[in-house]
Image 1 (cartoon, rainbow, N blue to C red):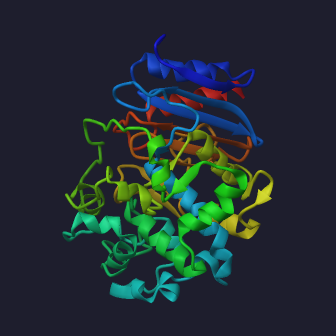
Image 2 (cartoon, rainbow, N blue to C red):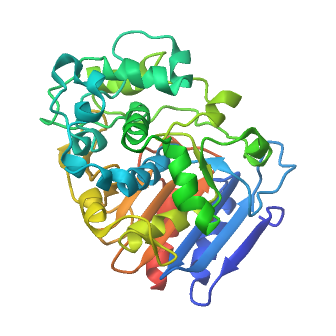
Amino acid sequence: MSDTPISGHVSAGFEPVRAAFEANFEAGAELGAGFCVRIAGDVVVDLVGGWQDRKQTKPWVADTLVPVYSTTKPIAALVLASVIDQLPAGYETPVAEIWPDFAAYGKDRVTIAELTSHQAGLPGFAEEIDPALWLDPEACAAALAAQPPLWPPGTAHGYHPLSWGYLVGAVVQRICGRSLGTVLRDGFTSPSQIDFHIGTSLSEHGRVAELVRPKTLPDLGEINAATRAAFLTRWASADRNATRWREIEIPSANGHGTAGAVAHLFDAYAHAGRIDGREVISPGAFSALTETRALGADLVLPFVTEFACGVMRNNLGLYGPNPDTLCHSGWGGSMALADPEQGLSAAYVMNRQSNSLQGDPRARALVDAVYLCL
């Protein structure tokens, strides 16, 4: 522990959070990590520690970036919510109304709400594709839109781990004529100087931490056709080490940022669509974004899941005690949460990935420590 660099800020009364952060390193569970907590817009915890690289030559510092994988989804969902009012019917708009090709195989009635809450039946490609297709977002979205659903849309939900982002990105583009990453930058990150990117320019790649991948697969429970398409075929994802993978926009999976940046964006969930007091999402759109759209046994994940329009609700109690907390995890252990009752947002990022699908023990220890301090 004495050789592990740890730095940052902890407000008085939150010292147990630093102790929990240090304990994760002492247990050998971390290589590098960051954790941030904001309450009423004020940063009360902002910690970084460990190393950016496997050889432990580059300390993890305040501006170290790391991919947060599916923790990107609720941030992309904020972007969609910021433009959804341009449609008279909002989330109840059929996707095919703005994207006619999506109507293939009887998907003409699938609404944006159903798509964003993982009810569209498109968790991946059941038939073989060239994995390089994932590196061409426009072509990949078109190929997904042309697919038959794996279950009747709207009758059940199953997590769309990668496909979700291509589909939602295409919806945003068709609503406002700009890419989702561009709307994120112009409407969210640039005005508040938030260091988060969906579509990370080559100039920033030198700040990105090196990942240590888990040695075993997560427990996916009973395998079915939807789980296989989502996770288990050799074409279920692209090369995540490729420069192009960082540079393109994959709103489900390739957001890059710091813990502080993710927590700052999640302030919008903690404060009804406002960041730094600035309204980024209208009250009506925020209410529609965050209401429960799907609750029950997930066809892809081995859990009962509860989805709003791109963000999860805390039905399993893995993100603190408040069931109304809005939350999400990413592959390997990243997570973010927003507790509107406390006006609290928090985010955890790291580069030593675990095989936990939700509730990574490192993140849970940190979140538990936060709530003990309140």
